[in-house]
Image (cartoon, rainbow, N blue to C red; front, side):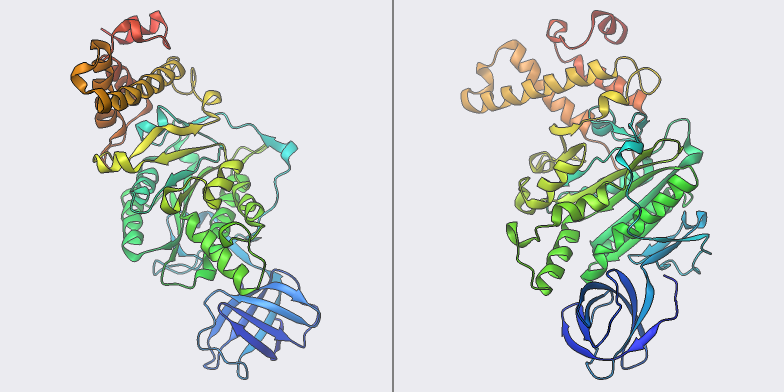
Length: 458
């Protein structure tokens, strides 16, 4: 954040949670940045959240603890929240407001950008097509991530979504264009041990391709609504100014939604479903829709938002609204987690709506689409057989059903399960998928061609 001159004034009338109300002013603008000087002379930053006649409501990023109504000065800066961006942000760690958090000086800003970004004209959007390799078989083989896509991860409390995010940071790459590939990671409301996990993954990746923005749980929650916008502002500069392909991983949007609800409650807004404000959909869309590709520009932004579903409820407002905006979802399953499968990705409810346009000849392999369909169908049948065996007993199953049951167990144990240090290429993933199909009679393989069977099966 750059410091600008502005008019300092007093007149605080109310402090309420992260908000302060100042009266006797005019000309304040929505989203305008302010400096708040506390009684000890220390500066805090905030922005105008609501404008009233001769008054303004300000959200303070560092919270209002320690402020007093009589001895606090507010200075209006006459600009919105801007982030200084540069190529040197890659390889650095920042806090949730974009300030260096790694003991090094701030990188010199090439240009300053409003963190709210610029809306992408829908007519100027280019259709996502190219494959991004994550190194995780359950994603690459069954729910492929495409350059410019928005593909969220739906998790639950206690599930290892942070470990999955760390794997993405370490292993994701763009085959053939690794020099133009970068990762922007943003965390909202995470614990210190989780931050340490991400820093370790950040260090192992070599420090040369990741820019990290961390908002910790013991920091004021008001900063959580800024973190994803700061991260995406950095990503937009790298993608659309420098022509890079940027993968943005943001976690946890449930913490973000709680911060949005807290602010709405502090303002006295009428709540909607489960206490969230009625504009939650448009608020999430203002973040998610910053991902994509633009015609005439060589760069792209691919977004992987991670959210935890309260009580594993996929109809909760945050996952529900996210599903309307994004192009699919990766779902983590608690039953798989109990079996010791990590990452516990359930491929049946998972979906990548753009997968068909980014795989095949030139991107992955000719047999990719048919193989993914066959694996999906076989695993779905295995689930049906498992439920049947729970009723009638495994000994009452037919020979074919027993082979499907063996396939399902092996598929979870060898294909879905993957060690945190195991990076699988797309070729290794597809070859592994064919090995899974050896558990089934060839006459059951109706989703692949005879030529593919002859080529890949003994």
